[in-house]
Amino acid sequence: MHWHLIKNFCVAAVCALLAQAVIAATAYPIRTVRMIVPFAAAGGSDIMARSLAKSISESTGQQFVVENRPGANALLGTEAVAKAAPDGYTLLLTTNIFTINPWLYPNVPFNVERDFAPITLAGSTPNLLVVHPAVPVKSLKELITFAKSRPGQLTIAAAGLGTPSHLAAELLRQSAKIDLLVVQYKGTGSSLNDLIGGQVAMSFGTLAGLAPFVKSGRLRALAVSGTRRAATLPNVPTAAETLPGFDVLTWYGLFAPVGTPRDVVARLHDEIVKALSSAEVKQRLAAQGFDAEGNTPEQFTDVIRHDLARWQKVIAEAKIRVE
Image 1 (tube, rainbow, N blue to C red):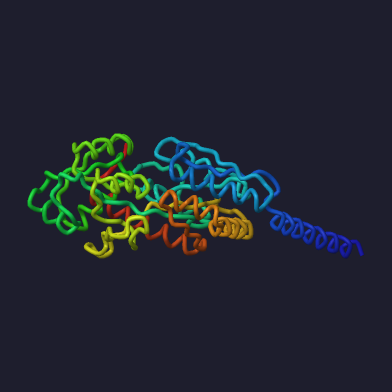
Image 2: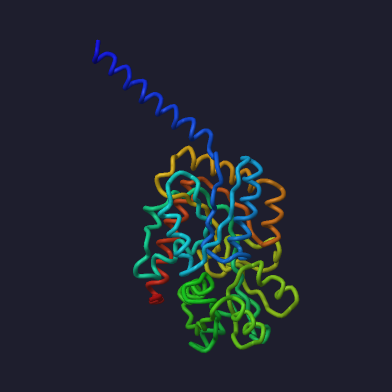
């Protein structure tokens, strides 16, 4: 009888714990959720995070707050999420710097594949390859021919070592087999000033950042780096039309710490996808040149694996290293 009572008690205790876990998961979120952005305020990732946070807060009735934690090329904020409790109350919204940093730095304090649970790729924006109007080329094909006749003389601006603009430049060098002189700047602002001023010949940059200068005639667009033409510049061909397989997007994705319950990840995924399909969020993102995405955690995992393999190859070939 004694053992029978103990057995019943144990069964009841296990059932109670399971019920508690189910209630906790179905009730999620029951308090404020922090969305850490490892960049300074006002950038693309910050705009994406705040657009989503506002919509999800309204939908769930709980506050989703954006916390900017810039530093060390996004490593600081990313590490904070890797070490956070896996309960769904600390999330990361970052860019594809996530798949670039592991190959740039010798001692990254986390493992991007092991320490995070991908939720969804929320949005993306293609880069634009632009030249100063004094450069006598009107297409990517003409640029490649022109560069081959002047090896090492044609300059291309990069907004910093290992930044998306730098890696897009390296990928162009490698794909087109041309010798370009990469000029490093500290940030987009100074590189854009020199590009408009004609101190450098060309650069990759975000569609939203460069489109106004293209439309005003201060820069000439040669190619969009995504897989499809941009709605805002429909006459500009994709780079892949000249260089098959060339595809460089800046993407914005959400992650939770590894070990976050699967149903919590699923709830977050559903809320983010719902936010991305709302007219208000779509409009706000489109104004920034972003395409709303919203793929599954499994599809996002595939994107990350593809990006990791691609950037490892590009960075190794270009011998880029940040100490």
